[in-house]
Image 1 (cartoon, rainbow, N blue to C red):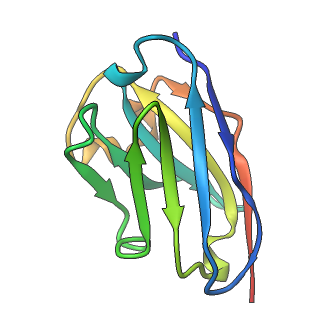
Image 2 (cartoon, helix red, strand yellow):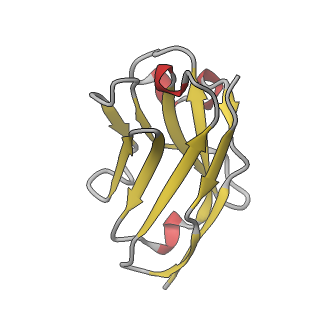
Image 3 (cartoon, one colour):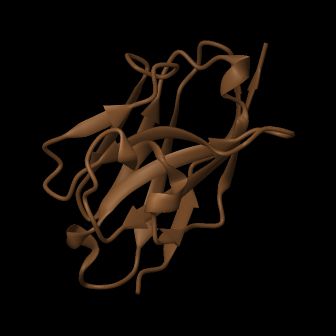
Length: 124
C-alpha cells in the first residue's frame, strides 16, 4: 500500500512554469511505476506523463510533450513549462504495481493508487 500526496499547484499566467511534487509513503516507492493525470471541469481524466521504476523510460501525452518533464527520486515530479490556459485542471499523481508498457500506461485503469489532486490554473 502507498499513499500519495501532491503539492505545488497554484495560479500562474500563460507562459509561466510550475513544478508539481508527489510524495509517497512506504518503503517500496521505488518499485512503482508513477504517473500524472489531469482532469478539467466537465472532461474525463486524461493522461499527462508516466515514468518507470528506474526512471529510464518516460512517456508523455502529445499535448504536453516538449513542455512538461516527469522525474523521480524519493518522490515524483512534474515540471511544467510554457503553460497554457488549456492546461488548467486538477492534477493527480498515481502509482502502478506493474509496468504495462506503452500505451497501456496512458490508461488510468492501470494504476492502483491515486492522490487527492492539486489544482493548476493558468490564466490568459
